[in-house]
Length: 172
Image 1 (tube, rainbow, N blue to C red):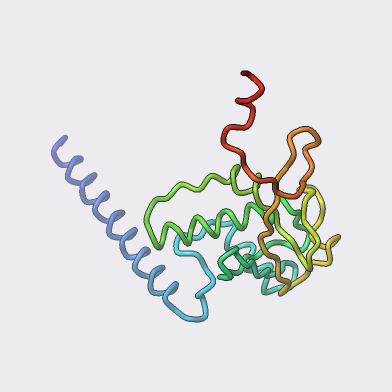
Image 2: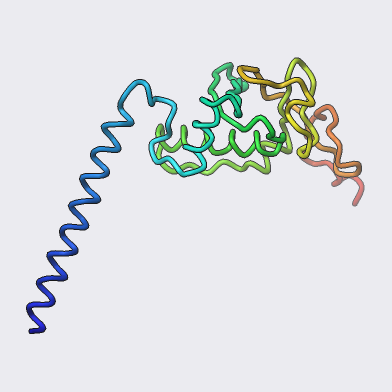
């Protein structure tokens, strides 16, 4: 009787595995469709929800230009903040890098400490500000802008040259 139940479990397991494989093949076939080209390879429910909201008009597509003048699009809700945009950019860039080079670590703390986003030369500094406050709407363009946060004021200031031995002369 035990051997019979084990074979039933194996049959159940193999049918579940077969169903998962069939679902994966159907999903990959769907994602290869040019109409669904903006859907990520491994979409989450939030990704699909944002894309549906984009089609319904309650989300916006923003084009982001990197420092090397390449660009990519991200979708965020109309009520999104600068922080939401940064998270969408982070997710998109990680997805792009993963597809190109496999696993690659990007220090986002370093990125946001040395660069900020800008829209029509206005820096998007306050993470809690709504994107609409900066005039960002569907099909707007933002770009990375070299900038450094000063530690004393925690505000962005113009980038200063790095001095490798800064502070060593004070000790001697």
